[in-house]
Image 1: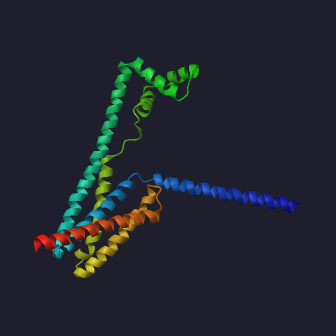
Image 2: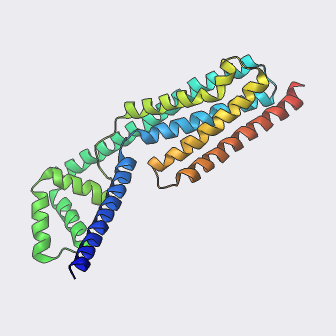
Image 3: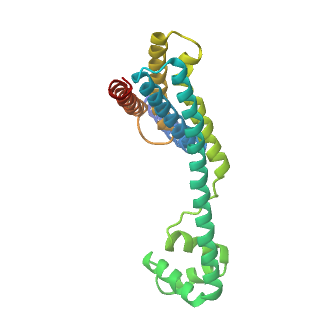
Length: 258
């Protein structure tokens, strides 16, 4: 009997350990996905840097341009498009921050100058949430006694604006730009290092394909997509874009240049 009880206790202990490890694994995955607020910018910038630069290189090769022209076009694309991407991300986040600030300022004015109307609005919000009678009045009294809490609720429930800590547009724009520059140099490396054209083309395709798959796989850090699925999707899109650019360059070279 004692042996049976010991066996049951050991089994329960093992099950609890297993459950704990499972929850710890889930927690680690969650924190991995939400940590690094600039990770999305890096993935976004790196992905675009690879695909656009590779497409430029492929199009130039399709048109039979000299290696120097391929490098010039590629480098020009890296700098111009990288700056454009970074600036675009900066402006988008700054505009979103300004919009949130403006809406909060507007709500603050309404609370100060149209208080009865705003009280009725917050009452309707919590009435629709299921609060009634004395409970509803207690909630309204508590919320309207603190202007900041009142503002938070109006922003979230009336305007549908999830107000968290405002993002830093400069850092987000810089993260996108740096990622674009780094990844954009990969399709050009073999040409810059002076490999023969045929070898440079082969190396460029291999390095770019590996990088595209890797960047796609890293999407699992910011989305629920499986790493291999994200990698293959990204690889397919990148090679498709590069192939299309090469064909366009080849056609133009045959029709226009010649």
